[in-house]
Image 1 (spheres, rainbow, N blue to C red):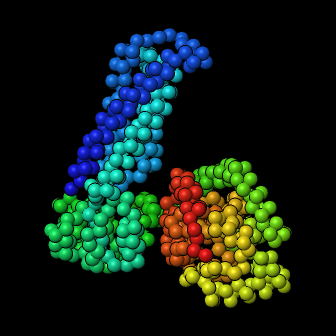
Image 2: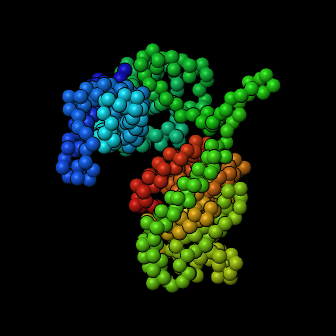
Image 3: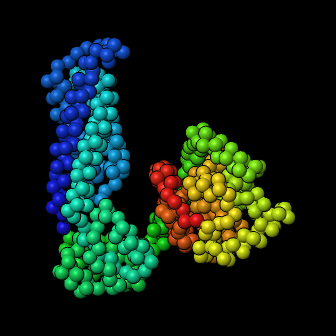
Length: 471
């Protein structure tokens, strides 16, 4: 059953939104009458506050209805604030279009463009502020008094579930308390745990469960108002498209939305975003370049050959963070020696398993290099790779040819789209993830790409940028 606190806060949410909408409407009306505002553009006519409020009374239920359709009265305490803010913006914009259409048909209401636009802006602002404050109160009660905590049962014993368990235990703000972690999906065991400790949600990750066992669990959860979630297999997360072929139903597995217009849209986003970032970050790049030159001279940029989309070779641009004589360029005698030295370091110090390597406490770094590599400043020149079309802002990381040679056949799926400066793996664990986990995240990205997902990963990249790497 839903927590009483969540039901209470959801009930409070509606009058809070209504109050915010009325306050925003009155603010818009009041601003219109400020002399300083009128000096910019005089009022063409006036209308009484009573008429204005009568229109607002008709619009408010419509706004609340659209908010409800947009899912803004979700009961969970663990909902994401920025996702909620985006929904408020979208829903209020929908209402704005409706109001404009209504006024066009019924002009006797009022047609003040200033009030309409300022009202829209203020409603979005006030509602978001109100929801932010309410969510802060809700999460404060969650952390300090445990009010609204969801009792969670984990079913399945594997690396995925162990990782989920660790994350939940380390992140109290997620709003979960693990009441049990069992290997079996037996309804009898679940019933006993529920009887002793209570269960609000179940997360299942066990590929050995039979259809019958899963069906029994789903039925039990439905009967007892328990939220049932499962972590799917790779095939279950694949995008499908159903159709008819020669009179027979047929399902096509869609590789990625990055085909046709999706590919064009992503390229436009890359060009625009990389251009803006190059301009904004040029002072940092200039300072970094000067620091590299000051410590170890030229070259400042290190060109590292990588494998791109469809197996095409290209050079990734990076600020050089290693000593000149230890840069691995196979085309020079010094580079060949450096390559042999690197192979020795990989054998002794690599902390990664699989095709990729990660040298811990790499002795080849300069002092400046250690700093810029720690905070990812060394990767800023890759924005030029994005602009030129070798890379994308978001995508799987580009790997070296010797790493790709160690791929299993299924790993080559990573080469079906352009590599990225950042990606799902980077915002989920950066260089600390094992290759298989990195691969799964990148495949999820390939199969579920959207422009909004790219934007989200770009924003998350900023938040993880200053976290320390394991060097």
